[in-house]
Length: 455
Ligand SMILES: [Zn+2]
Image (cartoon, rainbow, N blue to C red):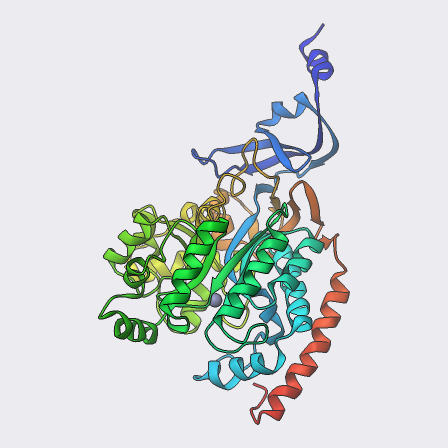
Protein backbone atom coordinates (compact mmCIF):
# COMPACT_ATOMS: atom_id res chain seq x y z
CA UNK A 1 0.00 0.00 0.00
CA UNK A 2 1.43 3.36 -0.96
CA UNK A 3 1.82 6.14 1.55
CA UNK A 4 -0.70 8.26 -0.33
CA UNK A 5 -3.49 5.71 -0.36
CA UNK A 6 -2.74 4.87 3.26
CA UNK A 7 -3.20 8.51 4.16
CA UNK A 8 -6.43 8.49 2.15
CA UNK A 9 -7.80 5.51 4.01
CA UNK A 10 -6.84 6.90 7.38
CA UNK A 11 -8.30 10.36 6.67
CA UNK A 12 -10.20 11.74 9.62
CA UNK A 13 -13.50 13.40 9.04
CA UNK A 14 -13.86 17.16 9.45
CA UNK A 15 -16.42 19.80 8.62
CA UNK A 16 -14.32 22.50 7.03
CA UNK A 17 -10.75 22.90 5.81
CA UNK A 18 -8.86 25.98 4.64
CA UNK A 19 -5.98 24.97 2.34
CA UNK A 20 -3.19 26.72 0.45
CA UNK A 21 -3.24 29.54 3.00
CA UNK A 22 -0.71 31.89 4.53
CA UNK A 23 -1.60 30.84 8.06
CA UNK A 24 -0.81 33.29 10.86
CA UNK A 25 -1.42 31.14 13.94
CA UNK A 26 -0.62 33.82 16.58
CA UNK A 27 0.37 30.94 18.85
CA UNK A 28 3.18 31.25 21.42
CA UNK A 29 5.87 30.90 18.73
CA UNK A 30 3.91 33.06 16.24
CA UNK A 31 4.20 30.18 13.79
CA UNK A 32 3.41 31.02 10.16
CA UNK A 33 2.67 28.33 7.55
CA UNK A 34 3.09 29.07 3.86
CA UNK A 35 0.55 26.99 1.91
CA UNK A 36 -0.84 26.01 5.27
CA UNK A 37 -3.92 24.14 6.37
CA UNK A 38 -6.51 24.80 9.08
CA UNK A 39 -9.05 22.08 9.88
CA UNK A 40 -12.37 22.65 11.66
CA UNK A 41 -14.81 20.20 13.18
CA UNK A 42 -18.02 21.34 14.88
CA UNK A 43 -17.14 24.63 16.58
CA UNK A 44 -13.43 23.91 17.08
CA UNK A 45 -10.07 23.91 15.33
CA UNK A 46 -8.81 20.32 15.20
CA UNK A 47 -5.58 20.75 13.22
CA UNK A 48 -3.26 23.51 12.00
CA UNK A 49 -0.16 22.94 9.93
CA UNK A 50 1.51 22.80 6.54
CA UNK A 51 0.27 21.63 3.14
CA UNK A 52 0.81 17.94 3.95
CA UNK A 53 -1.70 18.08 6.78
CA UNK A 54 -4.56 18.46 4.27
CA UNK A 55 -4.14 14.86 3.12
CA UNK A 56 -4.87 13.56 6.60
CA UNK A 57 -8.40 14.96 6.67
CA UNK A 58 -11.55 14.57 4.67
CA UNK A 59 -13.63 17.69 5.14
CA UNK A 60 -17.18 18.28 3.90
CA UNK A 61 -16.11 21.70 2.65
CA UNK A 62 -12.61 22.51 1.44
CA UNK A 63 -11.78 26.14 0.72
CA UNK A 64 -8.57 26.62 -1.28
CA UNK A 65 -7.73 30.26 -0.53
CA UNK A 66 -4.84 30.47 -3.03
CA UNK A 67 -2.32 32.15 -0.75
CA UNK A 68 -4.69 34.42 1.14
CA UNK A 69 -4.01 35.11 4.82
CA UNK A 70 -5.92 32.85 7.22
CA UNK A 71 -5.75 34.19 10.75
CA UNK A 72 -7.64 34.36 14.04
CA UNK A 73 -10.78 36.51 13.93
CA UNK A 74 -10.14 40.03 15.22
CA UNK A 75 -11.29 40.95 18.71
CA UNK A 76 -12.60 44.45 19.40
CA UNK A 77 -12.11 44.91 23.14
CA UNK A 78 -14.19 48.09 23.54
CA UNK A 79 -17.16 49.55 21.73
CA UNK A 80 -20.72 50.82 21.97
CA UNK A 81 -22.13 49.21 18.83
CA UNK A 82 -25.62 50.68 19.09
CA UNK A 83 -24.26 54.21 18.73
CA UNK A 84 -23.74 53.64 14.98
CA UNK A 85 -27.05 55.49 14.51
CA UNK A 86 -25.34 58.67 15.79
CA UNK A 87 -22.11 58.22 13.82
CA UNK A 88 -20.44 61.29 12.30
CA UNK A 89 -22.85 63.74 13.88
CA UNK A 90 -21.32 66.95 15.27
CA UNK A 91 -17.90 65.33 14.90
CA UNK A 92 -15.56 68.22 15.66
CA UNK A 93 -17.78 70.30 17.96
CA UNK A 94 -15.76 71.02 21.12
CA UNK A 95 -18.53 70.39 23.67
CA UNK A 96 -20.11 67.66 21.59
CA UNK A 97 -20.80 65.39 24.55
CA UNK A 98 -23.22 67.89 26.08
CA UNK A 99 -24.56 69.41 22.88
CA UNK A 100 -25.13 66.23 20.89
CA UNK A 101 -24.50 62.93 22.64
CA UNK A 102 -26.26 63.38 25.98
CA UNK A 103 -29.43 65.07 24.60
CA UNK A 104 -29.71 62.45 21.83
CA UNK A 105 -29.25 59.61 24.27
CA UNK A 106 -31.74 61.09 26.73
CA UNK A 107 -34.38 61.27 24.00
CA UNK A 108 -33.67 58.29 21.80
CA UNK A 109 -32.09 55.41 23.73
CA UNK A 110 -34.72 52.67 23.74
CA UNK A 111 -34.93 49.02 22.77
CA UNK A 112 -35.50 49.84 19.11
CA UNK A 113 -32.57 52.21 18.84
CA UNK A 114 -30.25 49.75 20.62
CA UNK A 115 -31.30 46.89 18.34
CA UNK A 116 -31.09 48.88 15.08
CA UNK A 117 -27.69 50.34 15.96
CA UNK A 118 -26.25 47.02 17.14
CA UNK A 119 -27.40 45.24 13.98
CA UNK A 120 -25.59 47.81 11.85
CA UNK A 121 -22.50 47.66 14.06
CA UNK A 122 -22.48 43.87 13.89
CA UNK A 123 -22.58 43.86 10.09
CA UNK A 124 -19.80 46.45 9.94
CA UNK A 125 -17.66 44.41 12.32
CA UNK A 126 -18.21 41.09 10.52
CA UNK A 127 -17.28 42.78 7.23
CA UNK A 128 -14.18 44.18 8.92
CA UNK A 129 -13.01 40.83 10.27
CA UNK A 130 -14.14 41.28 13.88
CA UNK A 131 -15.48 38.01 15.24
CA UNK A 132 -15.67 38.95 18.95
CA UNK A 133 -16.45 42.31 20.52
CA UNK A 134 -16.85 43.78 23.97
CA UNK A 135 -19.74 46.20 24.28
CA UNK A 136 -20.90 48.66 26.95
CA UNK A 137 -24.36 50.16 26.59
CA UNK A 138 -27.99 50.11 27.70
CA UNK A 139 -30.55 47.34 27.04
CA UNK A 140 -27.72 44.86 26.44
CA UNK A 141 -30.30 42.07 26.24
CA UNK A 142 -31.33 43.66 22.92
CA UNK A 143 -27.70 43.67 21.76
CA UNK A 144 -27.49 40.01 22.82
CA UNK A 145 -30.39 39.09 20.53
CA UNK A 146 -28.61 40.68 17.56
CA UNK A 147 -25.33 38.90 18.40
CA UNK A 148 -27.15 35.61 18.70
CA UNK A 149 -28.81 36.17 15.34
CA UNK A 150 -25.72 37.14 13.32
CA UNK A 151 -23.62 34.42 14.98
CA UNK A 152 -20.80 36.56 16.39
CA UNK A 153 -19.18 36.19 19.79
CA UNK A 154 -19.43 39.03 22.34
CA UNK A 155 -18.90 40.18 25.89
CA UNK A 156 -21.88 42.42 26.61
CA UNK A 157 -21.71 44.83 29.52
CA UNK A 158 -24.90 46.29 30.94
CA UNK A 159 -24.24 49.91 31.91
CA UNK A 160 -24.47 51.00 35.55
CA UNK A 161 -24.40 54.75 36.16
CA UNK A 162 -25.60 56.94 39.01
CA UNK A 163 -27.89 59.15 36.88
CA UNK A 164 -31.34 58.19 35.59
CA UNK A 165 -30.98 56.52 32.16
CA UNK A 166 -33.36 54.85 29.72
CA UNK A 167 -33.23 51.40 31.28
CA UNK A 168 -32.60 52.22 34.96
CA UNK A 169 -33.48 55.11 37.24
CA UNK A 170 -30.31 54.77 39.33
CA UNK A 171 -27.23 52.59 39.86
CA UNK A 172 -29.11 50.03 41.98
CA UNK A 173 -31.67 49.54 39.22
CA UNK A 174 -28.78 49.22 36.74
CA UNK A 175 -27.18 46.51 38.86
CA UNK A 176 -30.49 44.65 39.03
CA UNK A 177 -30.91 44.95 35.25
CA UNK A 178 -27.39 43.54 34.83
CA UNK A 179 -28.08 40.65 37.24
CA UNK A 180 -31.23 39.69 35.30
CA UNK A 181 -29.31 39.86 32.03
CA UNK A 182 -26.49 37.75 33.47
CA UNK A 183 -28.98 35.13 34.65
CA UNK A 184 -30.58 35.07 31.20
CA UNK A 185 -27.35 34.69 29.17
CA UNK A 186 -24.85 32.99 31.47
CA UNK A 187 -25.03 29.67 29.58
CA UNK A 188 -25.00 31.06 26.03
CA UNK A 189 -22.14 29.50 24.02
CA UNK A 190 -21.08 32.78 22.36
CA UNK A 191 -22.33 35.54 24.64
CA UNK A 192 -20.69 36.50 27.93
CA UNK A 193 -22.92 38.84 29.95
CA UNK A 194 -21.09 41.43 32.05
CA UNK A 195 -21.38 44.48 34.27
CA UNK A 196 -20.37 47.84 32.82
CA UNK A 197 -20.08 50.58 35.43
CA UNK A 198 -19.65 53.60 33.14
CA UNK A 199 -16.58 55.05 34.93
CA UNK A 200 -15.29 55.64 38.47
CA UNK A 201 -16.38 59.31 38.43
CA UNK A 202 -19.95 58.48 37.32
CA UNK A 203 -20.47 55.87 40.05
CA UNK A 204 -20.09 55.93 43.82
CA UNK A 205 -17.43 53.98 45.70
CA UNK A 206 -20.18 51.75 47.14
CA UNK A 207 -21.53 50.91 43.66
CA UNK A 208 -18.06 50.07 42.34
CA UNK A 209 -17.41 47.85 45.36
CA UNK A 210 -20.73 46.07 45.04
CA UNK A 211 -20.17 45.38 41.34
CA UNK A 212 -16.67 44.04 42.05
CA UNK A 213 -18.08 41.68 44.69
CA UNK A 214 -20.96 40.54 42.44
CA UNK A 215 -18.60 39.96 39.51
CA UNK A 216 -16.51 37.59 41.62
CA UNK A 217 -19.63 35.88 42.96
CA UNK A 218 -21.09 35.36 39.46
CA UNK A 219 -17.71 35.02 37.73
CA UNK A 220 -18.51 37.60 35.05
CA UNK A 221 -16.42 40.43 33.54
CA UNK A 222 -16.64 44.08 34.54
CA UNK A 223 -16.01 46.67 31.85
CA UNK A 224 -15.29 50.27 32.73
CA UNK A 225 -13.85 53.48 31.24
CA UNK A 226 -10.75 54.15 33.36
CA UNK A 227 -8.08 56.86 33.43
CA UNK A 228 -9.53 58.60 30.38
CA UNK A 229 -9.39 62.30 31.17
CA UNK A 230 -7.99 65.08 33.34
CA UNK A 231 -11.50 65.76 34.64
CA UNK A 232 -11.75 62.17 35.88
CA UNK A 233 -8.39 62.49 37.65
CA UNK A 234 -9.61 65.65 39.46
CA UNK A 235 -12.90 64.14 40.62
CA UNK A 236 -11.25 60.94 41.85
CA UNK A 237 -8.36 62.77 43.54
CA UNK A 238 -10.89 64.88 45.42
CA UNK A 239 -12.88 61.81 46.43
CA UNK A 240 -9.88 59.73 47.49
CA UNK A 241 -7.45 62.22 48.99
CA UNK A 242 -5.19 62.45 45.97
CA UNK A 243 -5.17 58.96 44.43
CA UNK A 244 -5.01 58.35 40.68
CA UNK A 245 -8.10 56.65 39.20
CA UNK A 246 -6.25 53.30 38.98
CA UNK A 247 -4.84 53.57 42.52
CA UNK A 248 -8.31 54.53 43.78
CA UNK A 249 -9.84 51.43 42.18
CA UNK A 250 -7.16 49.28 43.83
CA UNK A 251 -7.69 51.05 47.14
CA UNK A 252 -11.45 50.37 47.24
CA UNK A 253 -10.97 46.74 46.21
CA UNK A 254 -12.40 47.11 42.70
CA UNK A 255 -9.38 45.90 40.71
CA UNK A 256 -9.40 42.19 39.96
CA UNK A 257 -8.99 39.64 37.17
CA UNK A 258 -12.57 40.26 35.93
CA UNK A 259 -11.96 43.91 35.11
CA UNK A 260 -11.45 45.26 31.59
CA UNK A 261 -10.40 48.92 31.64
CA UNK A 262 -10.98 50.98 28.52
CA UNK A 263 -8.52 53.75 27.58
CA UNK A 264 -5.93 53.85 30.42
CA UNK A 265 -4.49 57.04 28.92
CA UNK A 266 -3.72 58.98 32.07
CA UNK A 267 -1.56 56.40 33.88
CA UNK A 268 1.99 56.24 35.25
CA UNK A 269 4.38 53.39 36.06
CA UNK A 270 2.80 52.82 39.47
CA UNK A 271 -0.64 52.48 37.83
CA UNK A 272 0.78 50.04 35.27
CA UNK A 273 2.25 47.96 38.11
CA UNK A 274 -1.22 47.83 39.72
CA UNK A 275 -2.89 46.79 36.45
CA UNK A 276 -0.35 43.96 36.20
CA UNK A 277 -0.58 43.00 39.88
CA UNK A 278 -4.39 42.69 39.77
CA UNK A 279 -4.40 40.99 36.34
CA UNK A 280 -6.64 43.68 34.80
CA UNK A 281 -7.32 43.70 31.05
CA UNK A 282 -6.87 46.95 29.07
CA UNK A 283 -8.63 48.13 25.90
CA UNK A 284 -6.40 50.42 23.83
CA UNK A 285 -8.53 52.73 21.65
CA UNK A 286 -6.07 54.74 19.61
CA UNK A 287 -8.26 56.36 16.95
CA UNK A 288 -10.91 57.50 19.45
CA UNK A 289 -8.29 58.85 21.86
CA UNK A 290 -6.43 60.87 19.24
CA UNK A 291 -9.64 62.15 17.60
CA UNK A 292 -10.85 63.52 20.93
CA UNK A 293 -7.35 64.89 21.58
CA UNK A 294 -7.31 63.16 24.97
CA UNK A 295 -3.87 61.67 24.62
CA UNK A 296 -1.99 58.50 23.78
CA UNK A 297 -2.14 55.57 26.17
CA UNK A 298 1.35 54.22 27.06
CA UNK A 299 0.54 50.87 25.44
CA UNK A 300 4.23 50.15 24.82
CA UNK A 301 4.96 50.37 28.55
CA UNK A 302 1.99 48.13 29.31
CA UNK A 303 3.20 45.56 26.76
CA UNK A 304 6.66 45.68 28.33
CA UNK A 305 5.11 45.15 31.77
CA UNK A 306 3.16 42.15 30.41
CA UNK A 307 -0.22 43.76 31.08
CA UNK A 308 -3.16 42.14 29.26
CA UNK A 309 -3.84 44.64 26.46
CA UNK A 310 -5.85 44.52 23.24
CA UNK A 311 -7.15 46.92 20.60
CA UNK A 312 -10.57 48.52 20.72
CA UNK A 313 -12.37 50.96 18.46
CA UNK A 314 -14.54 52.64 21.10
CA UNK A 315 -18.00 53.68 19.96
CA UNK A 316 -18.76 54.88 16.44
CA UNK A 317 -19.25 58.46 17.67
CA UNK A 318 -15.66 58.38 18.88
CA UNK A 319 -13.62 56.33 16.43
CA UNK A 320 -15.77 56.38 13.98
CA UNK A 321 -15.44 52.90 12.53
CA UNK A 322 -15.84 49.60 14.34
CA UNK A 323 -13.32 47.51 12.45
CA UNK A 324 -10.01 47.09 14.23
CA UNK A 325 -8.18 46.94 10.89
CA UNK A 326 -8.67 50.71 10.71
CA UNK A 327 -6.85 50.97 14.05
CA UNK A 328 -3.73 49.02 12.97
CA UNK A 329 -2.11 51.80 11.00
CA UNK A 330 -2.79 54.46 13.61
CA UNK A 331 -1.60 52.31 16.52
CA UNK A 332 1.67 51.52 14.76
CA UNK A 333 2.35 55.06 13.57
CA UNK A 334 1.27 57.19 16.52
CA UNK A 335 3.38 55.19 18.98
CA UNK A 336 6.37 55.65 16.65
CA UNK A 337 5.73 59.37 16.54
CA UNK A 338 5.27 59.96 20.26
CA UNK A 339 8.30 57.81 21.06
CA UNK A 340 10.39 59.30 18.19
CA UNK A 341 11.35 55.74 17.27
CA UNK A 342 10.56 54.17 13.92
CA UNK A 343 11.10 50.70 15.40
CA UNK A 344 8.49 51.23 18.13
CA UNK A 345 5.25 49.23 18.02
CA UNK A 346 6.20 46.76 15.25
CA UNK A 347 3.42 45.09 13.21
CA UNK A 348 3.68 41.80 15.13
CA UNK A 349 2.78 43.66 18.35
CA UNK A 350 -0.18 45.33 16.64
CA UNK A 351 -1.53 42.05 15.27
CA UNK A 352 -0.97 40.45 18.66
CA UNK A 353 -3.06 43.18 20.32
CA UNK A 354 -5.84 42.54 17.77
CA UNK A 355 -5.91 38.77 18.32
CA UNK A 356 -4.40 36.79 21.21
CA UNK A 357 -3.55 39.95 23.16
CA UNK A 358 -7.17 41.12 22.89
CA UNK A 359 -8.31 37.65 23.99
CA UNK A 360 -6.06 38.02 27.03
CA UNK A 361 -7.48 41.48 27.74
CA UNK A 362 -10.94 39.89 27.87
CA UNK A 363 -9.54 36.90 29.83
CA UNK A 364 -10.69 34.60 27.00
CA UNK A 365 -7.29 33.40 25.77
CA UNK A 366 -8.08 29.74 26.46
CA UNK A 367 -10.96 29.91 23.99
CA UNK A 368 -10.09 32.38 21.23
CA UNK A 369 -7.34 34.64 19.83
CA UNK A 370 -5.09 32.14 18.03
CA UNK A 371 -5.35 29.27 15.58
CA UNK A 372 -4.52 26.33 17.82
CA UNK A 373 -5.96 22.85 18.26
CA UNK A 374 -8.88 22.85 20.69
CA UNK A 375 -9.69 26.53 20.34
CA UNK A 376 -12.91 27.92 18.92
CA UNK A 377 -12.97 28.11 15.12
CA UNK A 378 -13.12 31.93 14.88
CA UNK A 379 -11.22 32.49 11.65
CA UNK A 380 -10.95 35.18 8.97
CA UNK A 381 -9.48 35.19 5.49
CA UNK A 382 -7.76 38.29 4.10
CA UNK A 383 -7.57 38.80 0.33
CA UNK A 384 -3.91 39.11 -0.60
CA UNK A 385 -4.68 39.62 -4.30
CA UNK A 386 -6.16 43.07 -3.71
CA UNK A 387 -3.87 45.69 -5.28
CA UNK A 388 -3.02 47.29 -1.91
CA UNK A 389 -1.79 43.91 -0.63
CA UNK A 390 0.58 43.16 -3.53
CA UNK A 391 3.39 42.22 -3.19
CA UNK A 392 3.44 40.63 0.24
CA UNK A 393 6.92 40.14 1.71
CA UNK A 394 5.82 40.22 5.34
CA UNK A 395 2.17 39.39 6.12
CA UNK A 396 2.19 41.29 9.46
CA UNK A 397 3.49 44.42 7.78
CA UNK A 398 0.99 44.09 4.93
CA UNK A 399 -1.88 43.79 7.40
CA UNK A 400 -0.85 46.72 9.57
CA UNK A 401 0.29 49.24 6.96
CA UNK A 402 -1.60 48.24 3.82
CA UNK A 403 -4.82 46.39 4.58
CA UNK A 404 -8.30 47.87 4.33
CA UNK A 405 -11.22 46.47 6.27
CA UNK A 406 -12.79 45.42 2.98
CA UNK A 407 -9.89 43.08 2.26
CA UNK A 408 -11.57 40.65 4.66
CA UNK A 409 -12.98 38.01 2.35
CA UNK A 410 -14.54 35.37 4.60
CA UNK A 411 -15.36 35.21 8.28
CA UNK A 412 -16.15 32.23 10.51
CA UNK A 413 -17.26 32.07 14.14
CA UNK A 414 -17.52 28.81 16.08
CA UNK A 415 -17.14 26.88 12.83
CA UNK A 416 -20.03 28.70 11.07
CA UNK A 417 -19.35 30.93 8.07
CA UNK A 418 -20.86 34.36 8.77
CA UNK A 419 -19.49 35.94 5.60
CA UNK A 420 -18.40 34.37 2.32
CA UNK A 421 -16.91 36.40 -0.52
CA UNK A 422 -17.97 39.54 1.40
CA UNK A 423 -21.62 38.46 1.48
CA UNK A 424 -22.99 38.32 5.02
CA UNK A 425 -24.82 35.00 5.20
CA UNK A 426 -26.64 35.17 8.53
CA UNK A 427 -28.56 38.45 8.34
CA UNK A 428 -29.99 40.61 5.53
CA UNK A 429 -27.44 43.39 5.22
CA UNK A 430 -29.71 45.59 3.06
CA UNK A 431 -32.54 45.33 5.54
CA UNK A 432 -30.17 46.29 8.37
CA UNK A 433 -28.95 49.33 6.45
CA UNK A 434 -32.45 50.47 5.45
CA UNK A 435 -33.64 50.29 9.05
CA UNK A 436 -30.62 52.31 10.23
CA UNK A 437 -31.18 54.93 7.51
CA UNK A 438 -34.82 55.24 8.57
CA UNK A 439 -33.77 55.73 12.17
CA UNK A 440 -31.31 58.44 11.08
CA UNK A 441 -34.35 60.53 10.08
CA UNK A 442 -35.56 60.31 13.68
CA UNK A 443 -32.09 61.38 14.88
CA UNK A 444 -32.02 64.29 12.42
CA UNK A 445 -35.42 65.51 13.59
CA UNK A 446 -34.35 65.26 17.22
CA UNK A 447 -31.22 67.35 16.64
CA UNK A 448 -33.19 70.03 14.81
CA UNK A 449 -35.82 70.15 17.58
CA UNK A 450 -33.06 70.60 20.16
CA UNK A 451 -31.93 73.75 18.34
CA UNK A 452 -28.59 72.35 17.15
CA UNK A 453 -27.58 72.06 13.52
CA UNK A 454 -26.84 68.90 11.57
CA UNK A 455 -23.09 69.10 11.10
ZN1 LIG B 1 -16.18 53.88 25.38
